[in-house]
Image 1 (cartoon, helix red, strand yellow):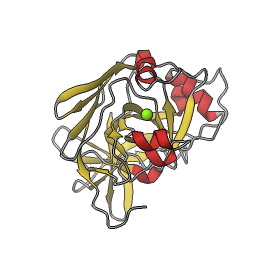
Image 2: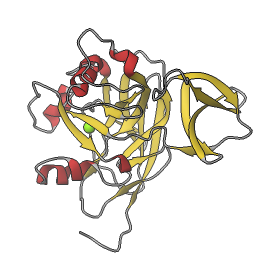
Image 3: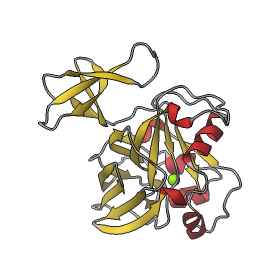
Image 4: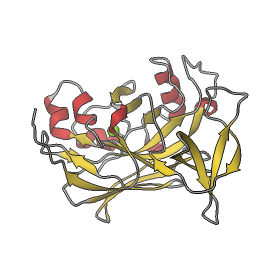
Length: 262
Ligand code: MG
């Protein structure tokens, strides 16, 4: 099922849209407090205000998880997943604008499959099924100021500008992720294309590995790495991340208007 997040009556919640366009509120199962586990749906009088489909406490990203992308940036493949964090404040919705910061001359798209955690995951053992800890999947754009990434020793600044994490348009809770296409189009022209079967480290391995480095909480996001074909974003561009079985995350690009430069 496809779930959106919205706000109405002073609360945020997940909802789905029926075929007739009416919204139904997802009620989380009270038997599993703290889990994202939908028990049933209730009618809503009107469609709520749309929010980004996730509100993560952290965004854990995997670098160089497609061999062709590592190669295009001149990097060796890591022997273990290369992890970094992206600021949760960088999240925006489908349709919101990616703002190019004045500090960078080279901002690039990175289309990725995003995993949404559904249940607290800590130190998962090899015999545990990671599927039990996944709420669903979404399209994610790990927007990156490539020049700042190269200049800094680590990735925090280059990955965490406001608007640098478009997600959506919704969470798909039922998806076989073993071999789906991940594509990025800029102004309708295909730039990136890969298949999740090409990941260096697959999703079960990533979830176990990350949960043994830090506790994952419901709503947290994992960005699983990007295929080759990253390219520069310019003001006026339309960037689309399309994942088979999920849909298309579409965001315009604009230049940030800022009075101060630091
Ligand atoms: Mg990335």
